[in-house]
Length: 173
Figure 1 (cartoon, one colour):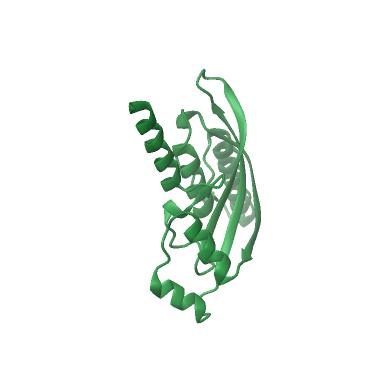
Figure 2 (cartoon, one colour):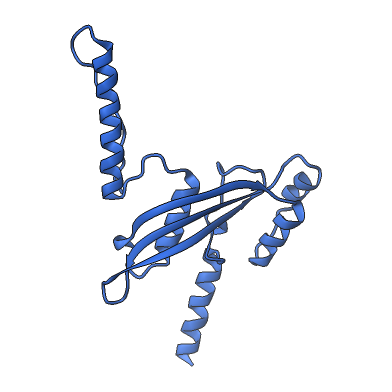
């Protein structure tokens, strides 16, 4: 994956205005070019994790192309909702995290994004899809996240792997 980094260019001459315009032009060029080639320089770690998890589920991840991205506001949730969600995906809640949540030292939150994308099907034809991506954070932050807890279309990576294993077992029988 390529990365775009806007760089300010210092032009010779006394005009600070020319330098500012050159910097803005470079930044806008990078954003425009980046969007065309699939490089999104300002994506949050949440979006990057969502796209990574989504691509891992596609038949041909290299053909993935994001069409649009829409965030819902980060939403504080109750401790019960956080714990219920983690348990519903067969994951454990660490005892010290549970203690921090119950003592209000941490406020859990839910992040949600919708990614509209094109990706090739089994015949190579691009098909448009929309994925809902969720992440339940124990502290309202996405700085330190567990990629296996990123939920795409209602399933985390462990559930997808478990379904794959079950299919293999069924085909072997």
